[in-house]
Image 1 (cartoon, rainbow, N blue to C red):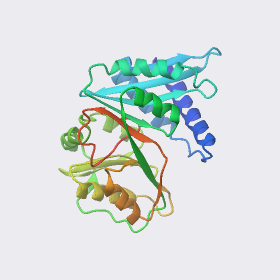
Image 2 (tube, rainbow, N blue to C red):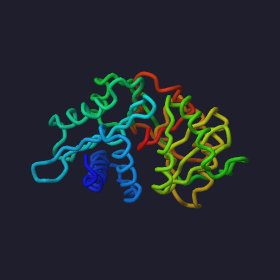
Image 3 (spheres, rainbow, N blue to C red):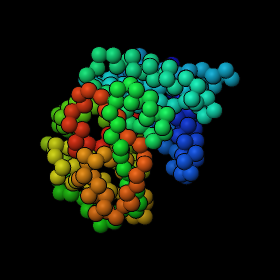
Length: 279
């Protein structure tokens, strides 16, 4: 992947996920902010050029892309898309192999998979354990900001790194700044955890304990304007605290949204809601 591919990969990702939603009979969600998407792609290309691969199509457009990162010995697959009409032809497997090669020697791996049977099969064959997830959505009610939760400050990075290393085996570091640059609000509970949210969607949460995680999630939901939809994703069965908060907020729980795929040492992965962009 080159710098000149950033906009094209951002567009291809949107087209591919919209096609996937249509095939499932699910209305595609509003497209993410272009700025946020391009910040993500540029961040990955800057930190992990060896993990960012694209395939050119015969018509000159991008046919597929796989972008992977490595943080403190933990590998993650951030983007993996093949243009509709070109899927199931072997291109996806070839791109995934290049992305996996970037993590050769890593002690752990994380993939957030859709429910597409082809993707699940690929990841299982690559040695990943599949942990099915639920999501939660709706207009939250009855939520109040928890005492002590405040805006994330530069001094909170050390706390976040410690929490990350326990929860996922590696710190996010500057990825948190990239989330904020892409439009997310970051909140911290000093010494105990942090959460990132944007446009009603909780996009990353890590905490030292379930109580702190619940406080952060309630605060993020409380900050969503009245009447706006909220969404919480990648909730595995180990995140009972998140399910309880979702029920408390009167959100609708939904099955079949995919799986968290883990391999090797990825920390406790609890309490933790991973980021689609930075795992």
